[in-house]
Length: 367
Image 1 (cartoon, helix red, strand yellow):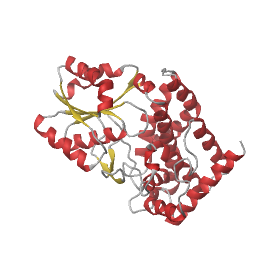
Image 2 (tube, one colour; image 1 turned 45 degrees about the horizontal axis):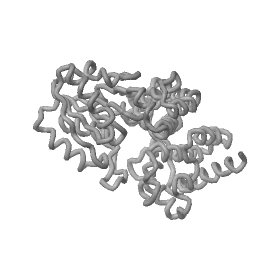
Image 3 (cartoon, one colour; image 1 turned 60 degrees about the horizontal axis):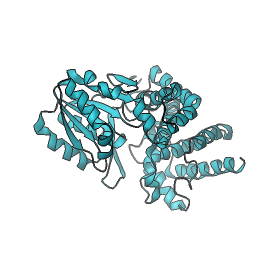
Image 4 (cartoon, one colour; image 1 turned 90 degrees about the vertical axis):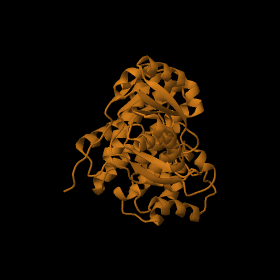
């Protein structure tokens, strides 16, 4: 019998204007902080973060994040920071910046603080990074010995971001229960090792319930740039519930298919992580042979959030069978997460991709 393993960040803080209190939360971590952010995020919150850190007697040094969460970028930033006696690394921004910050903290053996400025993925709470090549192709997962020491989410910042990012986060989070239940049924392993705990199962299922209940309201709140109870609930689901659910509950086909899409060239790479996961989730439902009524429940919800549901909408309208088979082969490569929930071939995945497109188009034609 496999061990049950549950992992999580040491502390999670969420609320309006929490960014202005970051110094209070990290003062006991050490005196020298390395802040990793791109120019856009730094312009948005750099001064506020620095002011709060300095008020708590912390020295703040900025490192520019440029490009991809790649081995090259990680090595560059870590090399420059090694001489600064860095006690904690603070990642500010989106998923790739945060994944890079985790890797740099690991290289420096420093504390890691994660401050997402968008609620677009469930990456913030996890003890892993998704590593890409410098060209943006999926390369590998990098695992760490511990989860972040602090995840701090300012919902006022989230509300100011483009609504597309929140929708992408909802799509990423909506895959959580779909994948976890597959891992449970198949007897697969989680990202943390072992099998899912009852806690992870309950969190993943609750995550989906919150998203279907409040997702559209939260999306409309961000369009209006206001913080509401619905937005608070969805930000927590996107970030904390999905993060705990996927890591301690497991990933399966939806994310493997997302990774498979990186095998193709073209405009699909302009889509967000969550937008590709949305279609990957539909493919997993098709792969499982779920009833059309259930499939359409997801399609309708995605459409209300302006998420892609067909091959045309993920920029693959003219993809050939050979192209789709490339995705299937990449999604079923050794070590991919699909093997935690399924025993399938590349050809079966390709068939499910084509079927999901047909099922979604059928639904849209009857609206």
